[in-house]
Amino acid sequence: MKRMYALIMDLPDAKRPGFYAQIVKALAADAPPFDRDKDLLIYDEPLIRDEAGGIMNKYHVEYEELELILLDAGTELAPTFTDFGLVTRLEHAYVYADQILLFRLSEGTEDNRRLALLQMEEHLQARSTRNGESYYAVEAHLADLMSGIAKAYNCSIQLID
Image (cartoon, rainbow, N blue to C red; front, side, top):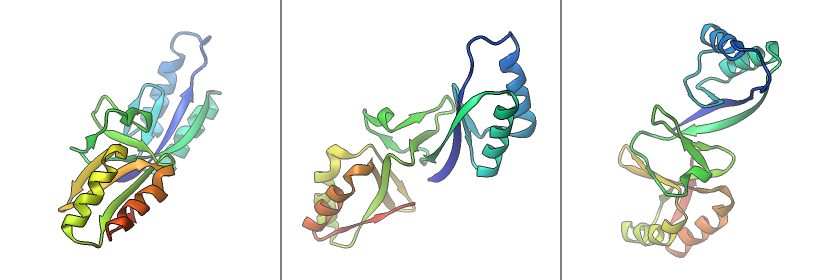
């Protein structure tokens, strides 16, 4: 998992042919994106996103900045995942950093963690395993619910930034 920095371009409709090509050329030269999805440009460094913002300003294109979290390859995604993230043509899965809570279960016995996870299952948007540890993603507003479920099974959640 890695924090990523994105901007969404609001391209004007009534521009001459080639306008978009000029922007793409400028981005390729000065701020090549790590990934993209339609009008969403994704960068792995905030400074490069800032460069892209400068290009948008130069061409008078409005944009909005946001932060994403790139999920590990092989992450299992829930059917409702696209309400809280996206999968690009390069098959990278991202969640919107401000809408998702990432955590892992800790403390308690393995059986207790398994039972807590069964209760949490219906709320999971994504799950992944890295270095033998499982990580989970739920809607951010469910933080108290996840903590309460974990506590009921003598476990706790550890937030991942």
